[in-house]
Image (cartoon, rainbow, N blue to C red; front, side, top):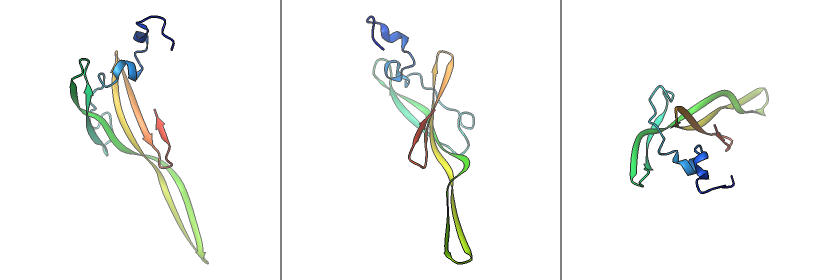
Length: 120
């Protein structure tokens, strides 16, 4: 975005770097915003005057089971005996919620077993 004036940043309020999503982060509710198998983390953010502010239950970390098989391998070293090994597609999800205006924005970072990271 090319600045047209000194106050051009006011129209980029969804940009976390300019607006500061840490200041608009809300606490998550157990069993409401995250599943039962989660772990919560508290975070410290800088307030508008720069003082550290602690917010409880900001992030939850949980496993997400896709129900698919990530990979399967069959060994046939012994004639007549097939040994099959399969691993489910389980991801690690880190979730936080920011409230901007009257909208809640759920941010999920999904770490896949393949090494990829999905942001949604």
